[in-house]
Image (cartoon, rainbow, N blue to C red; front, top):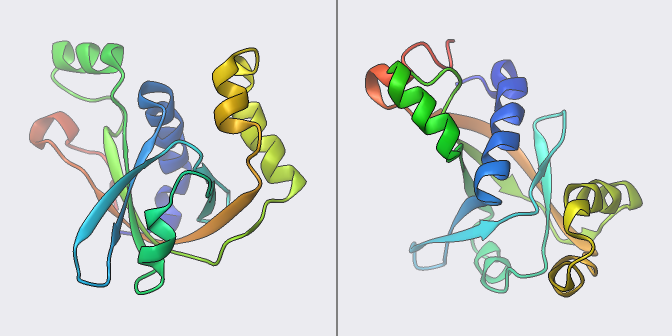
Length: 164
């Protein structure tokens, strides 16, 4: 599928997915070929078919990247309202989910702009103790260059989505 053609729609889906579940699932593969999924809430998509995530709570992922830098990111809109409305209508008005395929770069220090984008995302929680414990010290990121996408379909409920 042409990721470039659908990037705006992918970014909208990423936003609804994040609002509904607060994370994406990033799949990696270890040096023995075994898959592993990690929930990542800090993935931010850019406008140029790339993204970055803050590498703070991903102890196993960096080890797996030593042998294989490929990732698959699953984004699903799991909003109850979206699902109920869609089930009543018999059709998802917008795409339900997508898998993005990409490759990660090396870890690097986050830019001020990246940190600001992240802090804007979690600002609503800034008054909580959890915000300080989880998100105050976000400092290093990994870039992801997305090279492809796989549509997620559910038969008639998703017919017409991701037209090529």
